[in-house]
Structures are given as C-alpha cells and as structure tokens.
Image 1 (cartoon, rainbow, N blue to C red):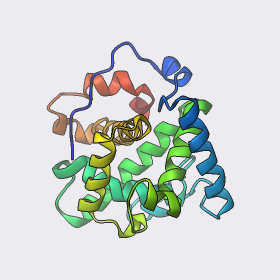
Image 2: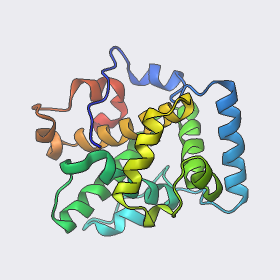
Image 3: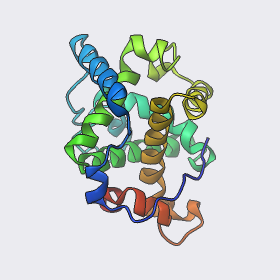
Length: 211
C-alpha cells in the first residue's frame, strides 16, 4: 500500500508541535481520551518498551524505546509491510531488520514531538491496541502479531476511504510517520528516486531528519 503522500509546504517542527496532529475536534478528542483511559485501566501497556520487541531482531540491541510501548511495536510491525509494500527487502532477515530499524526511527521521531501531539498519538495507538476498539472500530479481529499483511492493508484502506474524519486522519498519521521514518533513512534514499529524502517528507516531519 506504499503511496505518495500529499506535499505539505512551510511546516517546521515548531508549527507542527503547536498544531493538532490528528485534527480530531472536540468530539474526537473526548472519544480518544476515553478509549485511552479505558485501555490503560484494562492493563494495556503504557510504559515505553525500553529494549523489547522489534529491536531484538537487530544485531545492535542498544536502542532504548522512549515512546512506543510493546503493544505499539506489535502494531507497527503488522502495519509496515502493508504501508511500505515492495520497498521492504524480500529476504526474510533483511526484511525483519528493515522493519525493526523503521520502528526505532518512528519512536525516535515521536520522542521529539511536542506533548500535545504525543498525547494524540498515544490515544490513537491505544485505540488500535485495546481489544474492544480494535475489533469494533478498526475491525481487526486478531491481535496485531497475528494480523496478516492482507488484513493490515484492508484496515488501512477502510480508514483511508472512511467518511469519518478521525479515521482518515488516523490513517494519514500512521502512513506519514511510517513513510518518513523509512524513506528518510539514508540507506533507503534511493528507493524514493531522489538523492536525499523527498522534500515533502522533510517539510512535513522535520523531527525525523536526525533520527
């Protein structure tokens, strides 16, 4: 499902941190907040994963997660093959390494966001990780580690084409963060067809430039 995202001009880190990343509105913010509180009370992971999850597949296990929880890592490990598609290596070990590195850069990038945007993303991830809302709202029946690429692609397409703004914006947040973390990495520059990161990527999420 790898696709070129819209270009966003004249957007730097400061302006991004001041704006609502998901543009949820009051109703959406209240809904996400309620889900997030319920998820935390139900026992969903709330602390950063430290060295757990994707990093264990890498040769260098020194990276410490500062935002993503173990559940978030499972979420992105399921979604990245659908978002990035054929841009990921075909060889299994190289593919695992590419996914692990991208998840680490997602964590490093979000860590540099402002508190307001971190809060919104935490609520979005909680909605997708909490079993009840994962099933009823995302319509993903299995836990993320058991979700196939086809099922992940179906979820992304439903949210992309939904008439509900919260779902559209959630789709954009997930794909934008993932694409920038992947294509902004120097070893993947050639996959974008540019000598460096795509201009839209640098302008949209400058936090990832040094991740």
